[in-house]
Amino acid sequence: MQTIIQAVVLRNVGLEPIRLSLYTPLYGRLTVHDMRRKKQWQEAIVGDICYASLAAQGNRWFLYDLESVVTRVAGADMGSFFWQNHVLDMYFYYVPLQQPSGDLFSLLIQVLRISAAPDIVFKLFVAHFFSLLGYHVPEQLRWYRQVLGQIELHGLEQGIDPQLKMELEVTHAHSVELLDQWLMSMVVQHDHFHYLKTQNFLNQLYRIAG
Image (tube, rainbow, N blue to C red; front, side, top):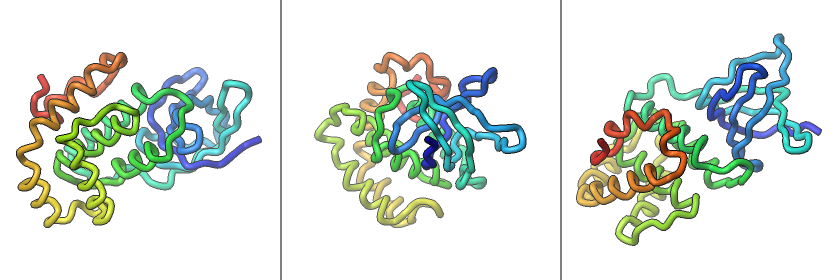
């Protein structure tokens, strides 16, 4: 029985047969076999938010239809592009298969819909990512939760609110180095760190990298 569900395309993982990695709110991270006919074929672009028609047979998942509803913002700046690829990379390598989380899915959607934002905003998203995976966040960095609430209130699809940007840069400037140190320790200690395609530009994301 097929089910239609919202999903994010994390990666193309095979050509013969075509296999895709998707992240879904109800089934978590899935590797699916693309069963679409050529006339139905729509290219699955990494980072696209889509609706997928899926069916499970035993431990295998099959994709029968896919319709993109949101592609990554065309006007996104290069910084956002790097961060979004970094986050997609970690969802693919750091999130276990078939362990669903509505919160992780919502976070990924939020990251992909940003057109432009200061680095600290993406760092807060990454901090929340590790928190949702069960990692302990140091007490001195838990202010990130309140800031994420403000960000959610303002919305970021049209860019960050100037007043909120100034508040972030002024109020939390002293905490950025500690935040970078903790995030880097989380990123590099994972067993799959060396598989990350984005590891080569970590020095563009975290101040202490390299």
